[in-house]
Image 1 (tube, rainbow, N blue to C red):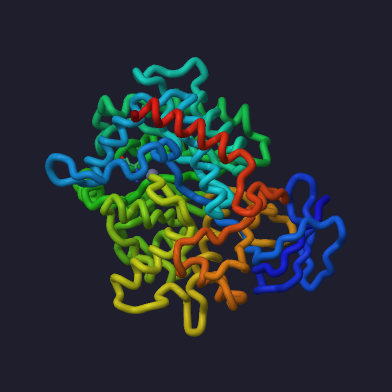
Image 2 (cartoon, rainbow, N blue to C red):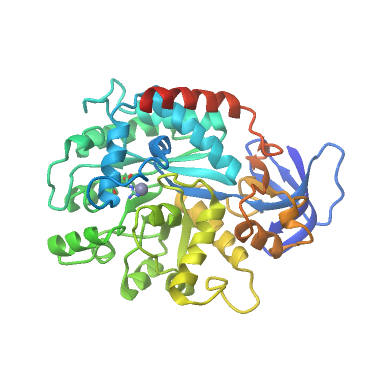
Length: 454
Ligand code: NGQ
Ligand code: ZN
C-alpha cells in the first residue's frame, strides 16, 4: 500500500482539495479521501491532479521522421506522397532501431501527460519482407520500449494483407507488414503467450483498414479475437471513401457497421468522413472514435464532425498517430479549434451553457482512451488504476486559476509544458518534469537516427 496526497484533484463528482489516494501494490486505487490530512508517509504533490489520458493511436516508427515530409516534392504533395516518404524511412529500421525510437517516443508521451499508449503496430518483418525467427520480434521491442519508459501499452498487432480494395497485391514498400490469416494467428498467439497476464500490457488486434484487409479475412480475424480492443483505420482520406464506394457500393463506416459486429470493443481511427447517419450509427454501437487532429491536419485529411458526434454523446479519444505532435494539449485544442473554424462559433464542444470546454474535452478523452486501450483507468476512483497527471499550479500560465479554469488554462493557454508529475500505477515516473531515463533514452535515439537518416 502507498499513499499519495494531492493539493487538489478532479474526482468523478468534481474538484476536491487535500485529496488522499491510497494505492495497493499492483497499482489500483483502494480509496480516495477528499479533505484529508496528509499522513507522514504519503508522497505529496503540490499541484492539481487529473486522471491521465491514453494516447489511443500510435505508429511509433513514424517518430523517426516527424517533420521530415514538409519540403515540397515533385508534383503536389498529399497523404499518399507522405506515405511513400514514410515507407522509405522504415526500409532500414532494424529491431534495435525500432526499440530506440519507440522508447524515445514513449518517454515523450509520458512527459506530455498521456498515461497509456495504443500501439497500432505493423512493422512486423525483416527488411526483405521475410519473417524474423520470432514472428513477434518487433512486438517484443515495442513492449520492451514501453517498459523502459514505464508507460502502459496496448499492443495492437496489425493485420495487413493487400494494397487496396479487392485484395490488390501489396506493394514493395509494404513487404514488411504483410500477413495471411494463419501468419497473423501465429503472431497473436505468440503475443498472448508472452504477455497475456501482464498488468502493464493489454493485447488487441488492428485490421489495418478496409483497404488493406479484404472482408472475409477481416471477419475471420475479428471472430478469432473474442477479447480485447479492435482498432481499424476507417475513413481518413476522401480517396479511400471513393474507392470504398466504387468497390462495395457503401461508404467505409456504413460498410463496416453493416458487415462487422462493431461494439464497445471497437475503435474507429480517423472517422473523418461520415454522414449524419454514419455518425448516429457509430454512437449507437458505443464504439470509440479515435481522433488524431494534429496528424489529420498535417496529412490534409479533413475535419471530423465533432459537434454532431459529441452532441449525440459519442465516445472518443485522441492519439498522436504520426507523432507530428505528441501532446494531449495540442490534439484536444485542435479538435475544438477545428469545430470553431468550421462553425464560426466558440466553446463549441463545451456541452452546454456555463461549462468549461477543456473539462468536457479532458473527461471525454479520459473515458474514451480507457475504453479504447482496455485499461481500467480514466478517473481517480477506487478500483481503477492510479494513472494520474499533476499540473503545475505554480506556473504563471495557471496563476490565480482554480478547478476547471486550470484545465482551460492547460488546454488553451500557450505551449509551456504544464504537466509536472506523472504517476503510473501509484508511482511517480515523471517527477518535476524529469524522467529518470530520459538522457540515456534520448542519446540512444539520436545515435539511431544519425545512422538511419544521416
Ligand atoms: C499508417 N497513417 O498506417 O501509418 C497510416 C498511413 C495508410 C495514417 N493513416 C498509411 N495517418 O493508411 O495506408
Ligand atoms: Zn494510423
